[in-house]
Image 1 (cartoon, chains in turn orange, yellow):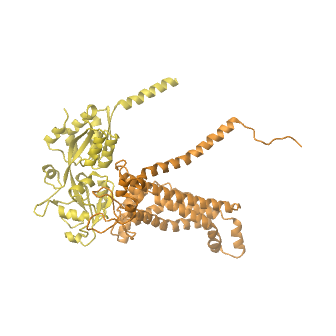
Image 2 (cartoon, rainbow over the protein chains, first blue to last red):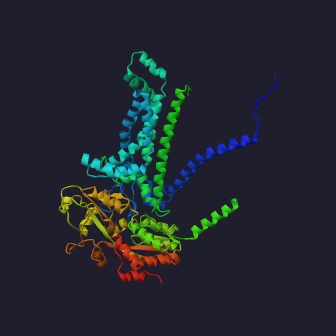
Length: 319
Length: 281
């Protein structure tokens, strides 16, 4: 009937603007890819160079090694030695211990605070709680590490009668303090996003406040809370300054939570400055960096993925 | 007008850049000494700026080899591998002894142990002696504190006390002698080692060279005399024989004035002849 064309008219300035903004967005992606490639490139000799593998091959890093004749095989991290030792197992166990203690400490606090803030707190109080807890996220980790080193370690040792003053528990609690705001923010957002209709339906059927919260809202918000856990865990694994200062940095294999630990991140921070460029020690440190990058990248990706799915579901888009 | 401002800025920047800047990097044991020397020297020579940072002897040596610093402060000599790396990079290293230092062994004031022999110290830090009661103290696990493996103090202790054996795996590592002292102050059953200059607030044990000798306290006199068994020289390494600002700074630090400052900062000054030997004419 009429000859209107709805094709968008090509305007050069808009074209340029779009491409410029797209380029800015690409910069972040490209930066991540390049960082990963650089770190991995410096770790490659472990997989390809036979001289490096004799000293620091994958099997040497994972399995118990008999380093000296007549002594038993064990896991040991002593890179500066006549016989360099690169077992990653003590470091891995240390990293996991610290992260686990942090999660055990942070999950009850974070989820509890989120439940209180979204379900039970009067609106005025909620406006105070949320920013204050998020303030915790703003504390520099070096300050927390210093606090753990000087104050928390002594208090723990006196209260619990611990043998070692700087240990996994000490570092784990301080780590937990940095994880609490992550879990709180995500869990609280997930719970306030649960539709009002769900709560009204439960109340209409005779549920009291507690029953509404724990039988209706919490299960509905569970994917979001789980995402919070995953993001918090990623944060705990990668945190460096706190463990460097407060964990004692002893690379041992032990199940006790009150023994000293050495984590991946603290190892890199402490040793990278001195290492001779291109040596096997250098390669191993970059290998550890690759591991850390991969773990935190995957946990963050997983957490974001769960959150996106949750958002889509709540907004009614089916997948 | 804009051009004038640009020119003025360039000239100002160029002026600050061409003013003498000397960078010192390396040993955490020596960092306080370097800073005191830098402060006093800059007071008298306003046109020179000296920047001092720590990081450990290993860090400083790596920086010198990579061109990241003018002077490397090191509390240990370079290892054969490091000398080889310097050769490979065609660097001519120049080493000067700047002061003496003893490595003190710290225990908490409440600890009943009064002295140790080198043999016992080695046993403690390699993990063969694990309980204080084996040394005459109360029955409790010995909590070992030490330095990170890039520290010159770590390297010296490992070579001379442990005779190149590994530290026990349970040795906790701390960044700097001050941190070691702080840890021992807070831990009744801890033991630590570090430069004698940092021993405020803990007890530094007298050490016996062997079971036949007397235990020697880590005092300044004992270290100058060479009587204290665990003492060492503190070095500055240069790339080539220094000249100009660096040479003046070096000669000043080796002079009576510089060595007096070292003593005031609780380091041990060099015997006069040794200091003179390092001065560059």
